[in-house]
Length: 304
Ligand code: CP
Image (tube, rainbow, N blue to C red; front, side):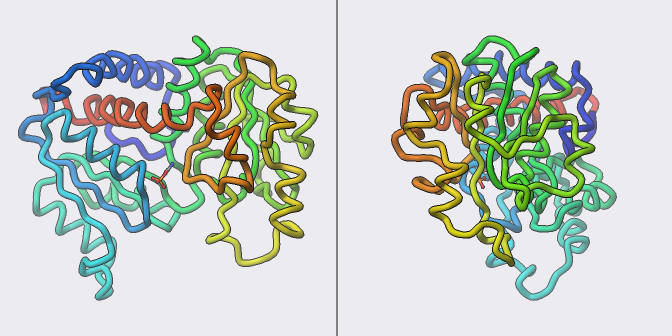
């Protein structure tokens, strides 16, 4: 494994290796001194062209816990605002000797292009509406941690699938790991290609909830919407929001997930988001260990 660009590129064994490595590294995170010397002398560049809280901070924490040198680059305040291209930015990083480049970009496919221009490993931290593979890995890790398995797990992913790189990466990864995914959304918020995805599709959240082991709520990405996809926020919430009444339809062991950031009161009520069966805060913590595992496996080898 040289790059981590798509969850679909991972074999079952590779995905499980990342999850198992993260489990070992999670033990380090429980110590008072959290640092390991594993990536001493390696350089990790965080290249963020789009806003991020969780992913950017957790990649930085992950690299630092493994003793890598970290360079944080955000497009705001850089020469990108003067019109510098992704290629020229990449070549500048290349000159600095980056061993790994973590990239978030608004254009689907940007990490793939970048991989042609740099010698180091490229990790996709979210590209447009395409993929977010480390989010899917941390989600799978969180499911396995809470429920003890992934094989045969019934996972409902609910909401704005059309604009969600998290949904696509989760469907690809979870199907590889033996989970059964159902996407739930209004027809307007499903991509046209969804029939080719390895999952079921439903428009009826109330019918899906009683059978689900995991309900993953997605943010309605208003900033990517240039048309009306539903009549009103209130109507969306009424049909696809996870509130107290819907939460009561879940079986007792089922968990609720959300990749964040949340629109509290729209796709998920505050009461459900903060309930003990919500893994939302755990997901953020697991993001650090899963990203440590990914960096370690990509650039931690002797021959780097
Ligand atoms: N889940 C996620 O990608 O969050 P950020 O946009 O804050 O990184």
